[in-house]
Length: 136
Image (cartoon, rainbow, N blue to C red; front, side, top):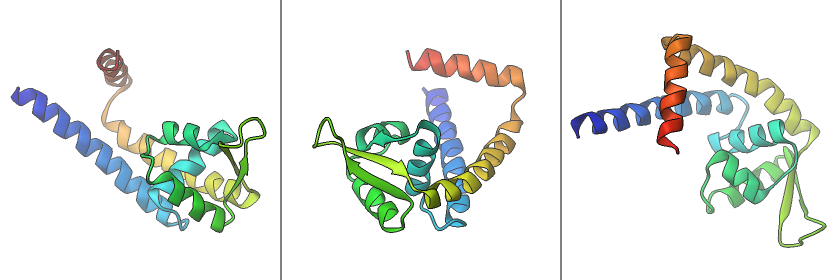
């Protein structure tokens, strides 16, 4: 029981540390953590519906509309109705948005790589195996 709590607390702290450092990098580009997440999802996956973005960045229903609205206002993304289903909206990066995330993402990737250097490759593989077992 005590070990379980320790594991959960440490996992949460690791996640909080990465989020805090990502938020710092995002802020250097005038972005919030949520905005960075949306831009990153679109950068890697291409055009996505609002729901698909929400799933990729593990966001709640309440925050996505505000984040999307602000990104549209800043001309970082474009939002259009899905031709096949007018209830859905498709998001895509603008040239300006692609330029911003193309600069910010590599900085974040370097930071994550540096943070993960506390583990060697064997330890990382063990973590992956254990997390897969947990997520079954």
